[in-house]
View 1 (cartoon, rainbow, N blue to C red):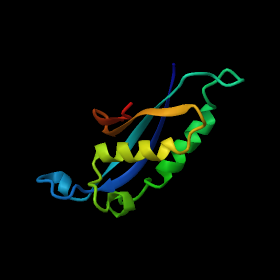
View 2 (cartoon, rainbow, N blue to C red):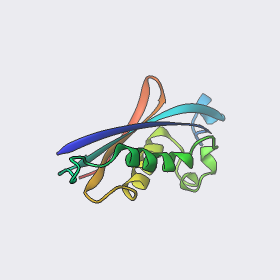
View 3 (cartoon, helix red, strand yellow):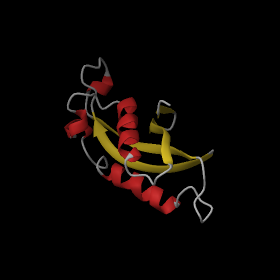
View 4 (cartoon, rainbow, N blue to C red):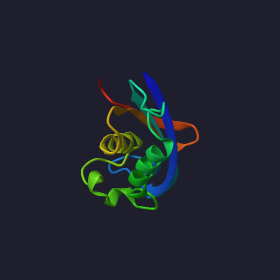
Length: 123
């Protein structure tokens, strides 16, 4: 099994509905995202996939989040825009953009230098 890691960033604001504390108010983060991708075999070039293509796929998803108020995005109409939910939505979106044989293993989203949530795809 091969495992690739691709990192990217986006900046966005949100507030947590129903939270009792400062995070209930509008605030922003410079989010860092790590995608962990797996594959069981290499292509004819000896790669799982071209990193350029993987970074592009992740970037297309994060472009929808970048410099946005996350609460206004359709996926957060009912789900709170928590770091955990952001990780899950990115994982689900990225899964549909990968080459055959490449799967999302997990997505980690850091809201600060010291705190992250990781969504692991159930096997």
